[in-house]
Length: 268
Length: 300
Image (cartoon, rainbow over all chains, first blue to last red):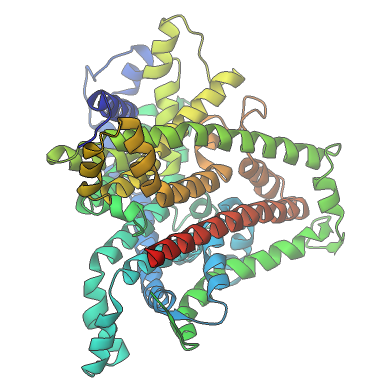
């Protein structure tokens, strides 16, 4: 195999660069504010879990996580279920305006959230969805649905056409073929698409913050409260940050074997 | 693979069309509506025609000056991070271990920054970079380098760029890695028999195989950096002064801060138009590259 010289050093250095800021965040989350402000210590000398306890016991904190997970899950389910048939349609058939439609979808994935913040606020207030997880879930569809279609189209195209034809000859109806044959065949693709929907909905802040006020406030918005009259509560902020990394890390661990192919959107 | 023409496929695509139309076309109509009007508050609007657009593109007005300055900063930012992240991502992908448990470990660590909420990315770098409590800021300052991203323009820029490299280089690396994985061993063996140099292997085998994924990487990185908002907002708040105020930050300031609906809407439309044009260029290049490849395979 051809490998580049010094590749162990390069990859190790890069991974350390990635982990260093995260290590610092974890380090801070176990410190008291007194220790953070007074001395520079590479590990907590008086380790404390008070920051975490506060998040787990204060409802205004932990409900932020629940709210975030709610809209992320609703969004993932909606995105995948509407994207599956569309991906099949784009992959197998040509129809009037298909290329334009695909481009239009793609362009929505690229639309800046800042443009939509205010109109979304008006729209969801008008239909009484403001401050519910549904508003954020639907708003996030604007970038997740096109992405899911894009990924799934790649995976459906990898399934040979003969399989469809054989199934129809065997007397499968279209819905039955779809559920019984196609979906199991592209299960890994669905996993990858779900992973991406989860990821982009989980990391987004601007729309989630604009479309909620009290009842459905996401954790990212709750975190902005740590600024108080007494200054920043760094330890608490760090602990909340660490807790937002954990769901992502768990999801990565489950899809680790598909990550590379998934990031190439099924198109290698 | 030949596709059959079937207009009924529209029924398969219809749900997606409806969902995206609901959240894209309806709001955009409101934006177009606002962009032509002015308001004195109390929901009283009057017609302003293309007034806002004229102001927006004229650098001598307040609005135009702010927009064009933030656009310039944003384009410069995108250019810098593309110039760093694309080559670095390729090098990292080429350095990935080939087999064993370390592959999974590397992939997981690489993907980690991508799954951190964007405001937390900002928080992480804030905590990491502050001169008083941050490891980076403290170390630099004790080495005698006067580093403070809150008061110094250059330091603020450096922090935002390094943060973006930290956050997104993995995406480029993972895409390239996927491209590299698809190269059959036989290609390398052939290269070895021919006595090809390391550089020749890279330019003749690996780079062409990564073409497609690299295009996706450049597209995603350009777009996402062009609409960056949360991370610099958390770390620098657009400052010091306006030095790291990118287009999205300026837009949110005008729309949600000052509630200047007409100005914000006009800015939104121009912003969207730029993105649409860039997107269209990439899409055309991408489909043409795909068609070329299909034609070559057909000929071979």
